[in-house]
Amino acid sequence: MAITWWENKACIAAVMVITVACPALAAAQAPRYPTRPVRMIVPLPPGGSTDIVARIVAQKYTETWGQQVVVDNRPGAGTSLGSELAARATPDGYTLLFASGSLATDVPLYSKLPFHPIKDFVPIGIVGQSFYVLLVQPSLGVNSVQELISMAKAKPNYIQYASAGQGTITHMAVELFMMNAQIKMQDVPFKGGAPALLAFLGDQMPVIFSPIAECLPHLRAGAKVRPLAVTAANRVPDLPDVPTLAEAGVPDSVVLSRTGILAPAGTPRDIVNLLNTELNRLLQQAYVRDRLNSYGLVPVGGTPEDLGNHLKSEIARWTKVVKTAGIKLE
Picture 1 (tube, rainbow, N blue to C red):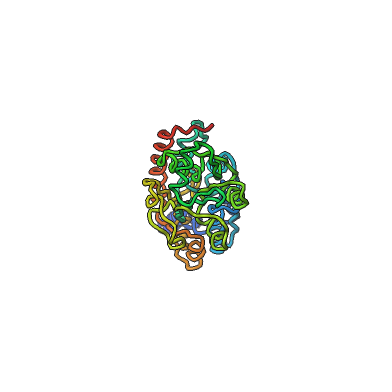
Picture 2: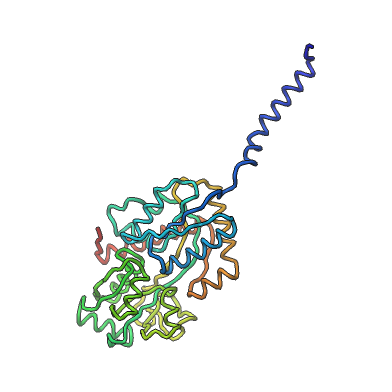
């Protein structure tokens, strides 16, 4: 039977409707991210402050999505080994980097850095903010920052300090302090903040700049060590009797380490936005805030651009410190 003009027009219209609707239908039926486990690389050993915060965030992401977010510790070469691994991963949202402030110090310290924090990553968001505590063993025989400075000036490179590794933000915090105090102490690098602190608590090292999240539990438990100062801008509630470095006579030594989440460059923007939105949501939860606060950490949050701008300013700051102090690492 012949098809009438009106029937033919109706068929054409139906085909057009289906054609237009198919992309929307396909999008509606597309699997929602994430559909499989997500790997969160921490470029430091387990037990340190960055690792502690990463596991809190990973747990909450897992609870929200019903997909496991696995923390993968990849320490080495400061923090550049794990960071490079994340930078080279497929940009599909299934590999993330949970970075410390060391991500910014890598740029001026390593002339042959195989990645760049700005060019090879897309920022997700800032997680938390911390600072460092200058601790000494009582056996060193100093009771104040000025006494430590006097000893270091009398015996250059005699005093050893434990760091989380060359090029890490903890190492750079001490370099900034030494530069401003015009002293020299000897760096003894460990593979992360947790091993460095264990060596210090075991009286194997006389001095350490330790993240508050790592040393606070030991101080609360009555560890027989002496806090001399904090790198915060103001005194902190958890250690009200401990002065800032500025109060102790060493100005311009504020070091605030921020942890953040990044993904390989090229990760789809909708996934970046989803990760950022969920991060800000979980940072508002009382459980998360209480956990972070219990370690002396402050939740931050914000936009991906906030993290990007923070990284740029930190790279500029530490580049100046590295150049002034003449620090060279291979």
